[in-house]
Length: 239
Image 1: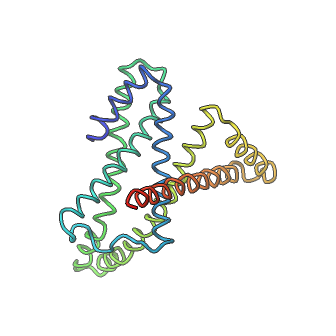
Image 2: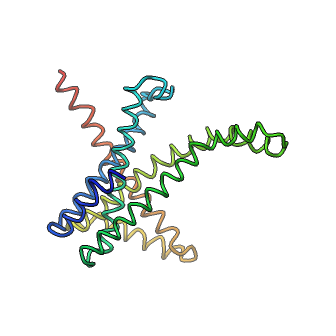
Image 3: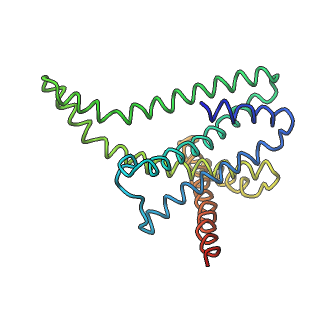
């Protein structure tokens, strides 16, 4: 809520009122950060430099603080992206209307996202509670939840990386088109038309896959460049 109401909402309203041309570049900066986050996770997987497996809370306050600050930073970027996208949809509304709409969006995404996160985080506790019940059915469901959660969390981790690369790449793809470089988006749109004409019975499914794949590939490319720069520059400075 602090991210949204103290930082993002006032800044977004000021920019939309006095410098609306800055909104697209800001969106693209956020998209670049998402690409970096996704590519960094891929690099950790490929290079074998995995973060420690032990929970941060068991490693001391400093480690837990790093995890929390990273989560807050990611929330700031994602929330800014969502609210700027919402702002673009209501750009023609009066200032007060824009403020109210963005406030509703901020409350809605906070409740929805962190409501889902809370349910996921507590699901194994719910399973443990059910496993201690007297009912055989409740115990079976509880054991299933406890065993299933590591798989669910591992799957969400993979989906999260893919989503960051896809969303970040798509934001960049659309942004560079809006800034005047039309060739990349025109190429993707042309490919969408080709697959749609080739298999019209599938409707918009194949074009969506083409767009998503192109966005993810762009996200990997941009993210890899930023990751390489972030790893090389500190080494050169140290040298």
